[in-house]
Image (cartoon, rainbow, N blue to C red; front, top):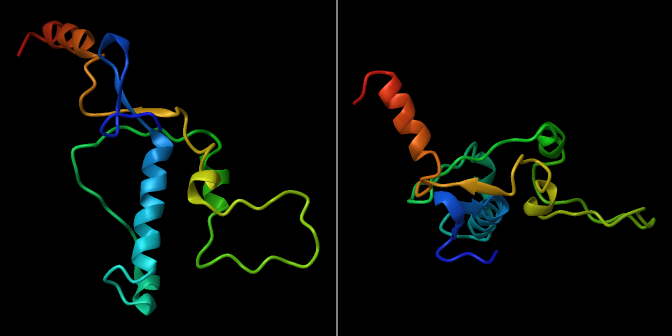
Length: 129
């Protein structure tokens, strides 16, 4: 993803992280859990949600295509391929299934200072700190 420590510094105080990098990271965690990463395989099906914590909090924006992308997700492993040739190769990787789900390929993260001037203007308009 051509990042340094998981982020990219851009002009004008923008600091971003590739959105699909987070998706790929989530898929890696789920894969490791399902392969016995401290959780018995039969218990994996009971996971209802996943939460993460760390210094890379940021903003991710869904696109209009998100519902369609989410509807392609399935529970459990992929079924075995059929004997008849498919018109196009099926993509099973979460990062492939979600590539159109987000409005922006890069997500602003906690180090971004690109809105500082706007924030100060709003603060002053409201009477200062």
